[in-house]
Length: 167
Image (cartoon, rainbow, N blue to C red; front, side):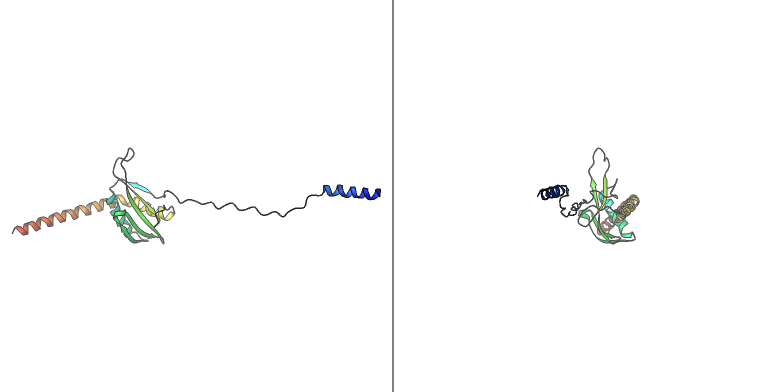
């Protein structure tokens, strides 16, 4: 009996040293997806010292003659052009900046957005807006000259009409 008690004690001691049964480990949960907010500015956003209407008209002239740009529409009251460039739909916007301590002259900001109004930040936008920034000063002068010539022609026609009506 003593042998039986000894064997039982040894079995109990060995059982106490055994590791506990392992439960299968579940793989860790993946972290929640990180939502990247839309950019709040675009790389190509720029400002130019010029009147908003002159800038808007000049932007339109540049866009319609730029290869790869498909002109889809415009809204002067909203200061925008709807275009496609490299297969992507965009809106090109012009907006006046308020005169302040840092802005002393009439200045217009030109930027691109998605059709829903969210900022766009990609290489194509940066390329197109860099082209606009480079060509706008000369095109604005061209637009001003064109409007001045049209105004002069209207005034001349008006004077000639008065002369004819007096005869």
